[in-house]
Image (cartoon, rainbow over all chains, first blue to last red; front, side, top):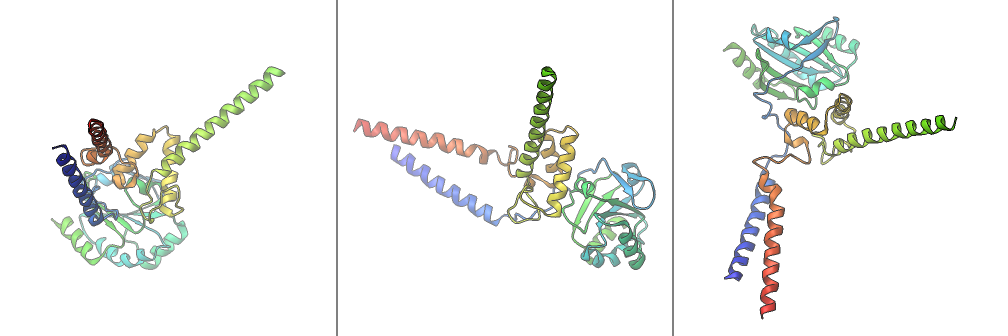
Amino acid sequence: MQKNIIKLFIVLLIIFIIGVFFIGLNKNSIYDTKDLVGQKITKIQLDHLTDKRIITDDDLKKNDFTLINFWASWCAPCRDEHPILLKLSNEENLKLLGVNFKDKKNNAIEFLNKLGDPYDDLTKDEFGKHSINFGIYGIPESVLIDKDLIIIKKFIGPISKNDYDYIKNIVRK
Amino acid sequence: MRIKIIAFFIILNFNIVNAETFSADSNKIFKNLRCLICQGQSVADSNSEFAQTIKLVVRDQINNGKSEKEIYNFLIEKYGEWIVYNPPINKTNFLLWSLPYIIFLIGGFIIFSFFRKSKKN
């Protein structure tokens, strides 16, 4: 009887170990942001790049939808998404908040003068500290929020044509 | 004069101990944070942009009097449990945390019963 219990235990243990390996090896360990969707962003305090003012939660609550875009003049993929941001800036219900990430002010202004300025407000994150509050881990990254500051979607990497269609559908509803 | 010298060394020693405590705390936190853009590196090991930013934020939070747990909770809220190497116990990982103890107890029981049986024989 006891031998059978031990055998059963060993078999169950082997099945369990195989199961753990099977699930563990099939699990996608790449960081994704699905946990962030539905979260509320708080304590927003971003310094304006050119004016002496601070963009806070209250400023963003005035907008139906806000796309917070983290970018820098030194970031090549940011150039790729720029035409799409310019197109998005024409959307009525959407405001674009640019966050210039670890960049030089002159370079940022030159970048926008050259390629066009899609942003309703442009702020800076000199040391990248504010980016942590938005769950950013690289640029370009964008966060679409509603007027309650709830995250609707987070876009990692340059905004694609599909992302553009998605944002357009959401803000036009 | 002698009292002043002793007082000076006591204050100096106190400051050194404080500085060591701060650095130990921040280093401990960095070691338990995963660098999300690196391959198998902690924030402590990495010099990437992301790791540097996390280090700045953690140091700021320590200076603002946040506890280690509060710092982990803040980062978990922003990046999910994947950012910590030592995730807190919850419903989904409870079995994983308790399994070593369960196996230890069952193993102990098997060894105990094996010895008891061999003694009888």
